[in-house]
Length: 236
Image (cartoon, rainbow, N blue to C red):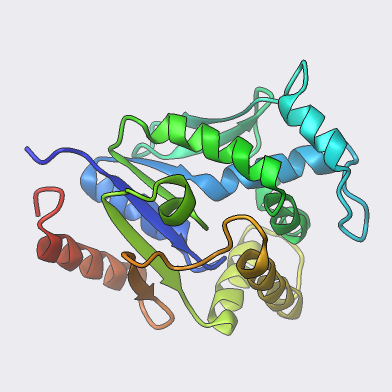
């Protein structure tokens, strides 16, 4: 039997990383971890504690104390019964819905750019991934968190395509927003992610590029299975 590996799925925001990563985790019987959700949970924590101003200035000392202080907040994942997917919890509360709002999308890249936040999240992710047999999606899993991951995939798509997907998803959930606001947010997040000082968003040298601008989820799964066969991974 092939030994389990860590599969790192990195890439730009709103490329469908979570949908893709969940699907390939189900195919392999692996655990899926949405690493971006942990950053979103930290951003939600900062918003709830009033640590972010309207111009996205962050009270770094306050947030550092919330994460590393005497009584630190607890950001964790719990595995649900639905195909090994993870749910995000903050201080004992399931916050999956709360972390997906446009309010959190506007601030999460600013929070994630802070070195002490990245250190906090990276440490937690390494603990989770130590047993392998996991699929993790995020921005720097294959470059910073697990540079020795058994398989690395970097996902991208045209900004306009990503904005339309994100807009349709939010409207389907009853969240009021405009396509223009979503597109602006995506472009801003791309810039912040690619220019942050610590672990900027970049394709690892040994990552496989997946541009899914014109692909369905089904197309991507076919692509993934063919990749596993070429690499002789996971029993394919």
